[in-house]
Image 1 (cartoon, rainbow, N blue to C red):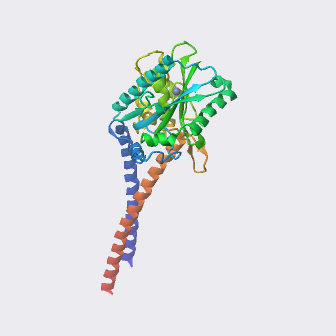
Image 2 (cartoon, helix red, strand yellow):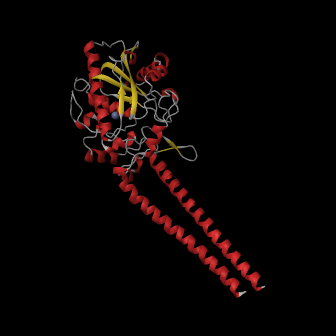
Image 3 (cartoon, rainbow, N blue to C red):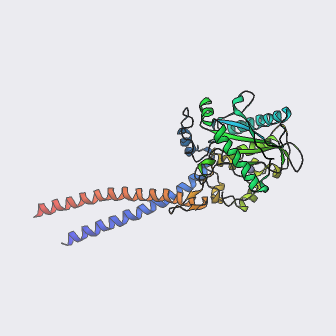
Length: 380
Ligand SMILES: [Zn+2]
């Protein structure tokens, strides 16, 4: 009787000990993970993007149209086709010199993106040259004068007309088949003097009608009267692939005032800081960089140390603008999502570890009880 009680107490202690050990191992795992994530930045490949790239159905163009959260321009890695739309509004007067300027800027911008991609080990292929590929050039008649964003409704009408034009007049599917690509971006050029260039990227919360991603680029700047330079072209194209602006804060995309200040302070050559912020005007080259901050948003890097300092920078899917939903289907900003994401991975790890230990310990207990029963049988 005494002996039996002792055995039960022993087994109880063993279980308590095992439970304690699970906690210790889990804490060690967490510490290890934090140390590891610090080292990851330099060497680790972006597995999430790699997987996404592998599954993008190369050779099956259009297959994931309206399904990928990245929008029509997918990853700045592999091949993307750019369609040029020259806006023929009532005030436009496209001269051969204007069109030459657009092509020249596109040439410099796309070469720059390819070279920057190489620095991060990415193979960027961009097909855009309308001389070589006349089927990528379109002229959209618009029966109104060009308007700027401040004009409100008239501006919205113009932007919607461009979407409509893409849907109705551009054989997107055929172009993607022809060039064997699953990634396509649209560049709308206006013969206009304007105060800004703009990109309409796709966000998962937007209606699928807006799946085609469009950059609007004007010929000249209102402020200086100078031609818009290739740096702006590259900047706008980067937006098509998920790059965020760093020259202004945006609650929607997790770019806080602190992040803006930090980038200005620490990454002054970052191209997404904006042309005016850098205060340079280069007509024949681009000297700004795609720093690791933009590389993160493009999906070229899966981790940057800034994520620990500014958790609102974190993006669930690389190369796009995602609004994430919480368990009740409400849209939340990235900060909350990242914590949730990390929490759930850690929770899974914890429960898996508990499960394994309980099964192993259960087997030991059963064997022990069996032995005791056999011994008791012998004495009986
Ligand atoms: Zn921008």
